[in-house]
Image 1 (cartoon, rainbow, N blue to C red):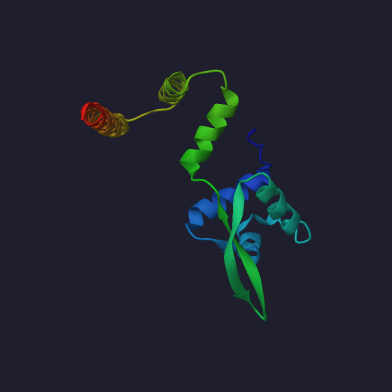
Image 2: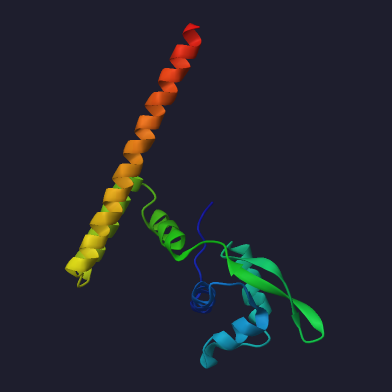
Length: 151
C-alpha cells in the first residue's frame, strides 16, 4: 500500500496525538492545533481524510456535553511513521541499506553527541544479541525437526 502524504495540519494533529499519549476527542484536537490553523467547519473533514490515509483511527467514544463523540488515536508510532516515510522515499533499496543511509545522513547532518552515539551502540548491541538468540533458536528447532523425522 502506498504511503499517503499528510498535509501540514494533518501532521500537526498527528504530533498532537503522539504527544498526548492517549486518544483525543475532536474538541481536544481542535483546541490543540495552533490558532492560525483552526478551521471549525473543516476539522471533521481533516479527521476523515486522516482516517482514509490510515494515519489515525477511531479509538472509542467519550461523553462530550450531552452527546458522545469519537476519540482518535494514531495508527502508528513516530518511529513506525519514520520507517514508512523512508520506505516511500527509498522503495528500491534494501532495509539494511535504507537503515545505513538514514543513520549516516542524520549523523552527518546534525551535531550528535558522544552520549547519543553510545546509546545507539547499546541499541545495536541489544539487537545483535536478539538476532544471535533467534539464530540459535532456529538451529534448535531445525535439529528437533530433523530428529523427529528420523523417528
